[in-house]
Image (cartoon, rainbow, N blue to C red):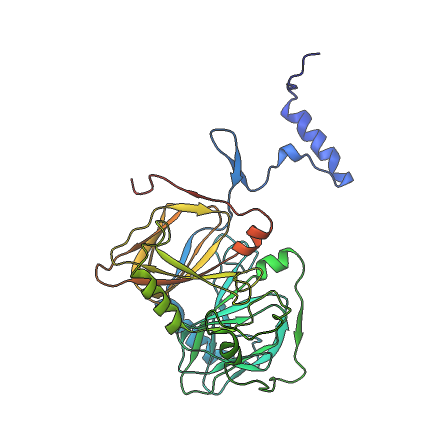
Length: 363
């Protein structure tokens, strides 16, 4: 017997009738809908992300955040957040397919009530003279450039005990958790938690580099360090820049890590800080993880999926999965610093993380 691929040429009408006849059985033809993929000239299938590249400019966002603080109190809003919604999605509050970003504001004397949820969250502080997030009883400082974690199912509330607004970038895995239909949320019995730990306790215990308390490690999968100060992060990047050329695709990039096991800060979110040398232009690459960037300092642009996204201090932009991207620091005298968070840990855990260079992007 000769084995070969069959070639049955039914008419379009016959195929349509067949497919309609399947509907009452809650059945459909797989070949008629291959989903969000594209086929290369060689015949292979690869992702075709629905999300699109986009940049949100701080000069547009800050006035709207302040206006929101005039219109809505923290009594009315569980969290007073401006959602950074990807233009490709009208039906979901997402920044990429799996990640959410928003701008949250807490005014002087305000608190945002305590709650917890299965969505993991981070706060990257944009504007603040102090204040704190209370994570399971620990008041965690919030100063510009700081990274603050509120892991899955950790109680947290926010308080501004200063005379100036606190504004930060929220980052959550909420789209992923909702796709998995695993979203739970619970209110704390009182509006605020008691401050039951020393201010910055996790920094005292786990922020000393290679040193940590002896004994059993925490029985959690997230980092026990809730606060990563920007002063330390920038110092580490600058010192490394003196001896390391960095990556051709990302410049000099470092990952915020769990001090216990060296892994990502949370099971679903990885966080990074990177430094682009004056005048640096990175090479293009793409990966199956999606990323949201925040400009800590600098003036430049990124070419994402063929689109040029101009950015400066405090802007935020997104790079969908499997989308080519490269960065340019327009300053010839000053480095640029970017913070980013990504769903890399999820892709890595599922053996779905893939990365490749994209040649010839500069033409």
